[in-house]
Image (cartoon, rainbow, N blue to C red; front, side):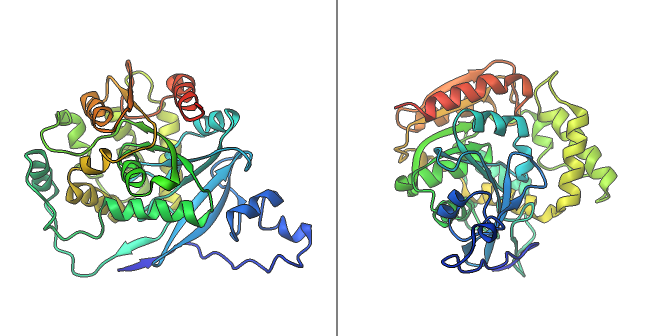
Length: 349
């Protein structure tokens, strides 16, 4: 496996004889030194966050943003398929900071400013065929893919270790919820409590996506121009997002930022291949010991709400909350309710 990085982090100076002013060149406050030697700077995406490139080993660097009081409980947010961390709404993040969390979000491998995975000689993959096989209980494990979900879960676990977070709360959305389940199962010492949003166990014979929403996984934009990518993003969000709550102006703005920040369509393809090749993660879900809450929208056509119910039934003692009218996104209207549910669960004694 070879990887490429968009930004290389500078090595920090020795801090034993460094003045406070120089320390603050790398850390927002001296308390941030507890997270290791990383070069933090103001985020380009959010006034509430700071950004750094974190080396997690094996040639992978993750672009990470964090904010809030570093003395507060850490909340690591794991985003879904093909989605840069900007898909976590800024207001949503601020609500968690105000609720008393130190919030961390990041670009998964192969997306945004994190390392890209390039493997020569991989065969061309028929994703529709893999979807059918997955749905009908046939394995895709013999299919050669760049990586699978356990590799992405390993990235997340290594990030927790690289930042010296200790026991961490996880919040995973969609594919990020699958990754979170694997991390919680394989690394119980790293996970305090967990919240999952519109996610799945990926097992066979679950209620499939509605045809219109399924089409969003295989339809491609007319070209790779910024104009066509923005148009495709608006169509995508109108298709999978919550009816009556899709802010088209904001969707356009985020699509432009995402395109200008880093446009790498292969990453989305390889992440989808990872989901399809990994198959059911039920074996991990059953091993989760962290107290878990599962939120799912009743209007989700991409991952029907019944899939969220299966997640909650598979994870021991998990609680399920159906959010009436919400689909496969995080609309502003629902954010106060969602943050209250999640915060109360994560901070429960």
